[in-house]
Image (cartoon, rainbow over all chains, first blue to last red):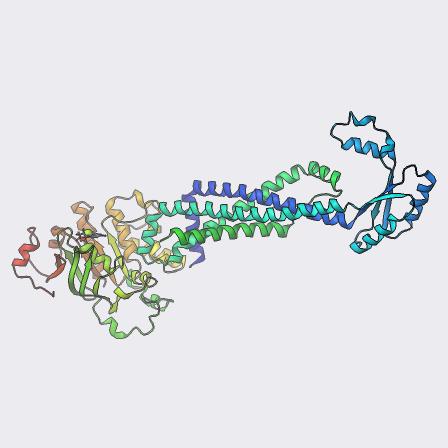
Length: 292
Length: 277
Ligand SMILES: Nc1ncnc2c1ncn2[C@@H]1O[C@H](COP(=O)(O)OP(=O)(O)O)[C@@H](O)[C@H]1O
Ligand SMILES: [Mg+2]
């Protein structure tokens, strides 16, 4: 089919059914916005998690009543190790304050003596250490005198990984849901406009149109709806993200250290193409169903 | 004349005139066959209601034929069999020598591109422009927008709507809307033009104008099958007359002077030549 004729006819259809198409695009845009937000959150979690596990951290809890000299000696020993990038000493009092800052209701806890909170050495590891190296290091450090216990945050990582895994499945489920919604919305839009254009379709058949000629503009319109909705979703998400970026990053830094990222150009293009494909596929399927 | 200037160009395009998709060995002899033949055609609606019962007829290239008969005689059914909106129950319909009753669904569009069809109710798209309504016949055939534009303006001139291509078709008067429909039917230079009561919705004076337009189109070489139950129309033209009655067709040769408003029965008593059946 002549491409220019096809586009002209699709545009004519869009003009005639402007309201119908705009409301369809609007509902698709909301669905795509949910999907894009989920994908963005997931990607950021993944990045943060891998960055954090790469630039790993260990906490050495010190024996109760370990002398200042012994602590300094231990610190000196540790600073000689090549795996360790930076050491931070947290005293009993600092540990107490940190705990109180995180507690929901500090009033009753405020009376607790500082001695209850173990002092620790926070070890920031070199990036890109292999898991086996970290394992070996941890075993070695656990046997040092003056060290009461060692926290590798393994359970935290495992929990984070489980969360990310669940988030991945959730996002896949959400994509399927959005795909169904797109098919539903595009399908009912097409059914309506097929009914309204039944006269045109009759005339086209009368003058010898192939089924593909009749379907063509509807498919172009479906592709356009999908792409437009995806574009609106991305723009809306970008406005929100960059509008609230400092707040978002503040929260993220508090928990994870590091900052969030928006979609790169490749991901944006991919998202738009995905929207267009979904729209096109949706219209192809519904034409097969509704166009006798 | 404008209508024939493209014949050469058309035969060189990808799908010249073919209504069969693989029409490679279309013999020269097919061009000598009558444009339309019905051979013993039966069409039933329901078990015992036969609209056509053993219809036989032949229409040669370049003829102008009136198809008449009382309302319900089966005129529309006959035309819808030719356009393959309906299929025959038995018998054959040959279009340019090819049996169209055996066409597959995929080939039907190619058949219709060789037919120009005009209805009583115009069947134009009111919210499209006049030009868009006419152009659709060429758009389905994949012509370039430029060629379509020039062909459409030529044909609008032919039907007396010169320079009105940009108007919304729905705003035109009934007679003008029917001219748009005729332009849409003839813009592809079809081998056969089928008109189903095309003047039925028009005032007598406008109806005569439309008949005259069909006669002009016929004079440029087109074959026209014009269905009408309006004797006033039939009397005006000196054309061959096919009369449908009770599912069969009777051929009233042209030049019949005493065709009267009293209808088919009178004519028959005067000694119709029964073609067949
Ligand atoms: N789709 C249909 N279903 C049932 N009966 C039909 C249908 N189309 C036509 N008929 C019947 O076939 C006969 C011929 O109709 P038609 O071809 O419309 O006649 P005409 O055009 O000569 O007035 C009529 O009795 C009509 O009721
Ligand atoms: Mg009729």
